[in-house]
Structure formats: C-alpha cells, structure tokens
Image (cartoon, rainbow, N blue to C red; front, top):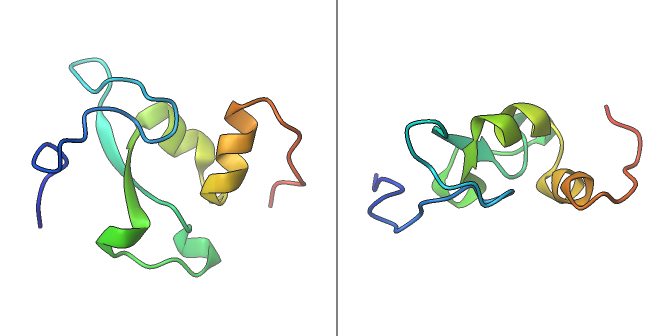
Length: 76
C-alpha cells in the first residue's frame, strides 16, 4: 500500500490542515464502518486527529456540512 506522501497528500481532506509535527495524519473512513463502509483504500482519506475524532461515525457529507456551518440532521 502506498503512503499518503507517495500519493502527494499533505493536508487533511476535511479542513485542509497541513500535516506536520503538531498535526498528525490519520486514516478516516469516508463511509464509516458503522454505516457499512469497508476498510479499503477507496474509502479512506487522510484526516487530522481533530477531524477524525470529530467526524466519528458520521458520513463525510455530514462532517463537511458541519465544518461549513450548515445545519445537520440528528447525529446518531
């Protein structure tokens, strides 16, 4: 499996925070495992710890709407 660096990914897919000593890269499931997502490369994006933990088991669209300040439907 290729690393995020080999794929030229240097920032969070959600908030665009640049990875470095203070911002650690984590793999996030776009479609959460709890929602039927799978642990395969096409379902993974690089995320900072803040976004990965904040998103939790929400779908990516719901997390992006939250970051944009839009109203969310009830969180599960």
